[in-house]
Structure formats: C-alpha cells, structure tokens
Image 1 (cartoon, one colour):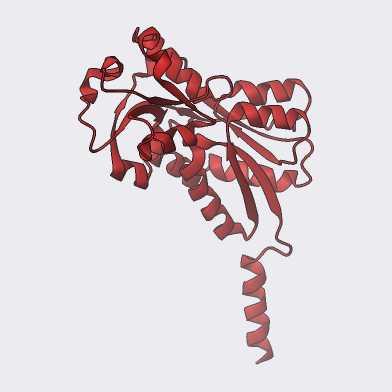
Image 2 (cartoon, rainbow, N blue to C red):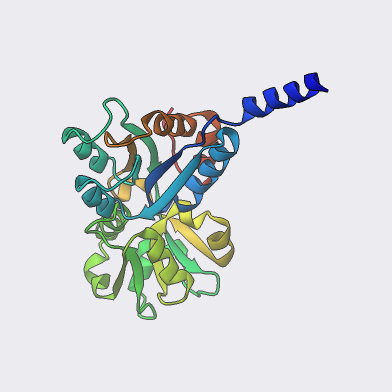
Length: 252
C-alpha cells in the first residue's frame, strides 16, 4: 500500500507544479480568441495561471510607461514594445515578433452589400456607419485608414466612421447592428461567432503597412521565468498552430 501511495504522489508531483504561479498579460484585442486558446493549453500543461487583459496596443503602451503591473505585453504593433525596450523597461533579449496580422471588410450575413467590389463598396449610399478601431492608439485602426486611402475612398467616407476603443469593440459595433460594415482583424472574423454571423473580404496586404506584432517581457515582472515560458510555448508548434488557425502569419 505504501508503495502505491508513493507512486501516486510521484505521478501527482510530476504533472503539478510545486507552487502554481500567475502572470498578468496585456494583449492587443485582435488576439481575443487566439490567445485564449493558447492560454488554455498552457495552463492545462503547466498548472500555472495567466490573467489576461485585452485592449488597444497604444493604451497599454501608455500604461506600461507608467509602471502598469503586467508581466508580458503583446502588441499589434511591434513598434510599441520596441520603444519600451529602448526605454529600458523590458527584459533584454525578450522581444519577439510573434505574428503578422491582416484586416478584412466584414458585414453581417443579411447584408446586401457586394463585397467583391472591395473597399469601393463603402461609397454605397445605403451605408450610414462604418466601424473601425480608433487609429490614434489602435494599429488595426491605422491599417484601416491606410487601406481606405490606398483605395481612394477615405475622403468620401470619413464622416461615416465610428471609432471603437479597440478592434474588438469595432467588431462588436457591426456584429450588434450598430454599424452597417466594418474593417476588422482577420483573427476576429475567423472566430466561430463572427464567422457564423457574417462574411468578409480580405483586404490585400499591400494596401496598408504590414501589421507586424510583437511581444516582450517587462523588466518589472516578478515572474520573468514563467513569462518567458509562456512566450516559448507560443513560439512552439502548438502555439504557432493556434495562431495560424486564426489567420495570423507566424514567423519561421
């Protein structure tokens, strides 16, 4: 009996960390669904916990400059973590370009709009409100504006734009019917709820600057080893597969 109990204890210790830790992650809202899948699998395999906060990359950048208590920062624009690195606020060598994002034109399935027209469809008089993320602090909002300028429709439609605090809120505006159409992240359009509720047209990658996304471990983190472990898990085959599943291009 003692041998059996000893074996059970050995197995339990092998799959359970001696002391479960928790890291706080600040992530761009385009990662809403992808990173939740990654976190779920990481927690399952390690027994540690990840506290996730979603929002706009620019807002998180401003908060982190003021010492916001996060261990890891996932930005939709790698420029923000690079600036934190230059300011000496990150763990040296932890900066990682984890993905390149894409933007799409999305409408509800009931919409009569012909998305094969591309962004020129935004000139349709029937369109009263167009949802995008706020370009002042959301990289996907800047990509949306750049794409509309590239298609030479921005001047015609700028007065109909409705700005979401982040790309997830912009998606909510169109999914709820508050807006007629929107330019959102491909990663959100491919999520189960939105793929069921609507349809999309993928905006060509050359219509806007590349959405290079970067992550970094914050120097103030008290759990740097665990933060690095989570980043390593994302870089591994399971993490890469989950990111690809949501339309991200991941680095080789």
